Amino acid sequence: MFKFLPIAVLSLAASVSQAAQLTALETRWLNAAAPVIGYAKSLQLPVDIIVQPQAGPNDVPLAMGFADGRCKLVLSMRGNPNAETILQDVPEGKRDVLIEAMAAHEMGHCWRIVQGSWHALPAGFTEMGSEHADDPTLLELSKQQRQTRREEGFSDLVALAWIQRSRPAEYAHVYGWLRTVRDAQPHSHGSHDTRAWLKLAPGGGVFGTEGSPFEQVVALWRAGLLQDE
Image (tube, rainbow, N blue to C red; front, side, top):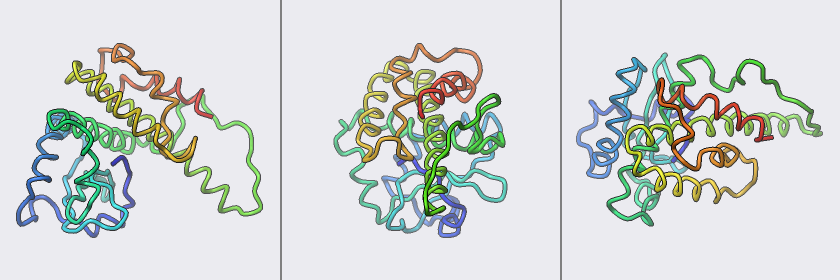
């Protein structure tokens, strides 16, 4: 659901324009994501839509990649059981807004990459303390988890700021679903444990009204960084 794809994955994908025919599920997800995609393009974010002809064994339905200077919003629906089940517990009429929020989350990744800020801490922030392990690969894995968690936290806030901007009546629904997803993470402080940020945004009023959703979340993201570790 919320995942940044390695560039290598994109070689397996086919663009929407090349796809022989979109499935009904792909069409639904793209239609639900259309407001976010249109807004991103209005900001001149370099976004392409990719539809994989066949999902891989570990693919999530919607993810963001980056290649050749452009963001790649990747749909991996075909042959992906998760694409059918990810929203199965959500009432039919409440699903599209969650897809829209997922798309906004992925655009948060695109924004960070285009800004040249991917995996970077904001000015004035630095990691404190030190870790020790006999195996250096464990230290690198821990670092990657921290970096991913920060980016996921940023993008979760972007998803919520977008919903507050576009569909404020649905904020509580989206927030509750997102909290349920993140509460289900198997490990505290894992790569997708964004609860340090979500707890700062129980209501949409925490976001400002000026600027883009990407800009509106910066102060809250910084506050979450102070609590995450």
